[in-house]
Length: 99
Image (cartoon, rainbow, N blue to C red; front, side):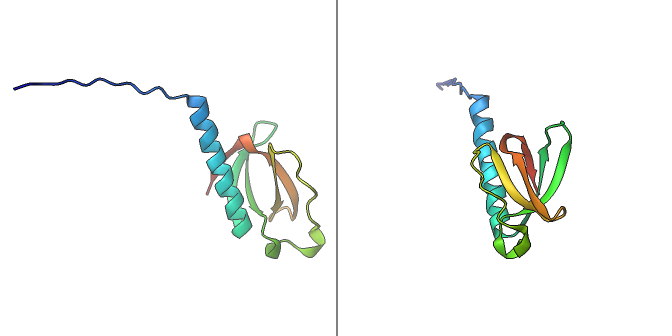
């Protein structure tokens, strides 16, 4: 009987994995907001956690809400906050969960 032992190692760049997961979470959150209302959580600038119900679906945004302005900063996501009835933003890297 011959026994063969195979040893291998996998090197994972944790920062790259986290960045890719963050991008996937952001893409899914944006998609949900375009389809309807998304419930999500992010870390505010003061360090507290914020739960938001947001949308990017024009059918769900009141006509008098305007367009929310132009979002020229790729690090920030603009959304219409259903509870506040106004436009809000969050820093994409601070997005922590989509429900």
